[in-house]
Image (cartoon, rainbow, N blue to C red):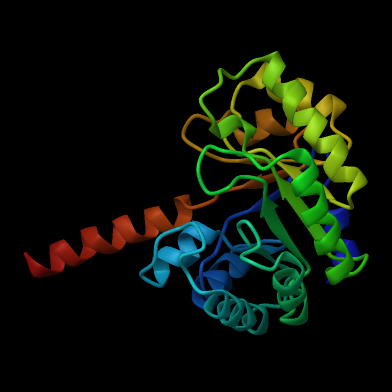
Length: 240
């Protein structure tokens, strides 16, 4: 499947479901379940390597892991590149060369602080130039991960960033942390980019999110957490 076909899967109201993988084996299992694409989650990939999230995992390991996933499945693969490490253009180019059709790039500084819009626009432009025109850049904004209450004003902040990110060459808008149905509907109705949400215990049901106009649903670290909880429970039973 080409990058253009992957882009076409982002349809508001009929969201692509990404049940995030962390290695080649998990990607193969997800592919067998009927996935249309594979997405990695940075938290899960780092944890599977014994590291914490936040670019603690060396980029070389993240790209090597990506190569194994791409080789293991006959599906398009998109990688979570967190903040792009030290060299956004070089990082995105490496992911594209390894076979990814897209990536996530976030606008936080690793905590609750956001980069300025201008700084993130510069980084997205560099990523676009490095990756070429077909590569799907999913611009993540962490405005809903801060301490501000989730309200209409915060949606306006997200939309301002969406407009700037779209102009810089982004293909999608990832807004983890947002779960209020009314705010989701407002965002999807006015976003210049297809909206990606993360499924959490607080999220509306996928069918309801589809009706709200979401175009992409990611499961983030939760598949890995569930798998490890089951593994631990089975191991405890075996050792009992």
